[in-house]
Image (cartoon, rainbow, N blue to C red; front, side, top):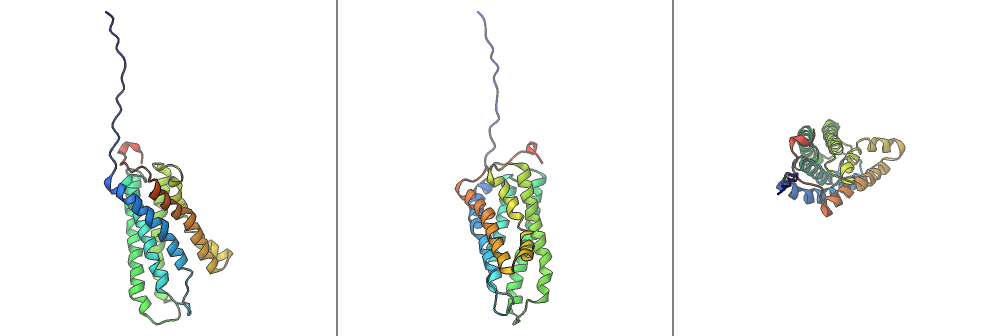
Amino acid sequence: MPIWVERSEVYPLPEPPDRGAVVAAPVTGLLLAAGPLMATVGRTHEPEGGGVTYVEYLTRLPYLAALLALCVLAARSGAAGPRLGRRIAWAALGPLVGALGATFAIMLVGLAMDTEDRPEWLAGTRPVWLAAQAGVLAVGLAIARTGRWHGPARWLPLAGALSLPVEPIGRVLALEDAAAWLLAAWAGATYTVLGVILLIRPPATTVPSDRDGP
């Protein structure tokens, strides 16, 4: 009696989703949907004397919280990559925490000063903000390069981080108030849309193995 032997294939089971990433996705979506817009709109509120205002810095807090959540999600879900990209995402938290601390310092110390002009020491906090924005830009590049997220979610983190040159360009081409509204429009077209995507249909939150890429 003839015996037929058929070739069979064994497929590995998919890795379970990271619980932290599953929880972080909707939280990040909520923060991204509102935080960046609050910050850019807050920049349009100028005090009468041209000094600093609580509104401007209060609205930066949810924006920074949204960027912190995005970096954590990129690291936990493997969206930035399982090795180098994940390290970049974790490392980006440092400058963001520094920017958060600088914001609280300005609110607690600087805004208590009775001055019509912005204090000169505020310029010393700008490198912290630039480092935080550069870190988020690196995370956006890692997400786009890895391709773990598909569709617009793959490119929107990078597009949102490219707001770094938008403000100075807006200041050159238009008035300062117009530059602030340009930032608001940019945030709405990138981070807010990404937030809605994460709320409605979160990207893959599985943890990739080291074989999946850099």
